[in-house]
Length: 162
Image (cartoon, rainbow, N blue to C red; front, side, top):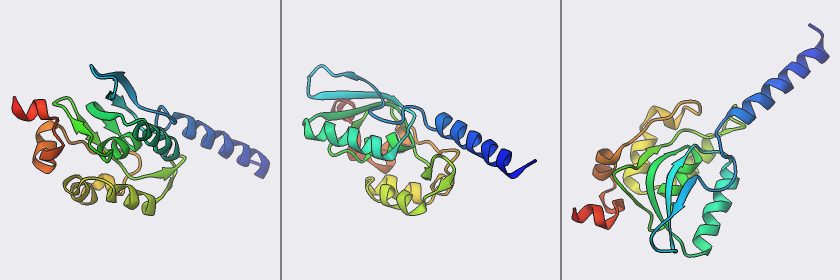
């Protein structure tokens, strides 16, 4: 194969990988409004662009929105939803982080560390000792019972009282 065609093939492969990695690259994960207009309920997030997620969650904060995590949050959505100030989670919440990578291909360990350090201490410590901390392709998951053990103060009040 000639050098030019190798580069075209590599370019096409990188494009496909970038487009197929981490779903909604910008903006918020799937969500619905809460009973109070200041509440946003996150129902599913497949991750995406760290910068896009950062801007989306920063805008929520600017608007004074409270975040309720009521579904699985993967990758960038996991980092930003679970580190959002005063966020809480329901029995449907699943925390599914993994290491960061540029375009889903080039590992970025220093960014993974910075994002992990934003998490509540129990989640941060668990993640830094989990294989997903170094794996940017797969992810690990914590369901409600595990979340409750590692970050009990993050459970939504109505659930704590039930």
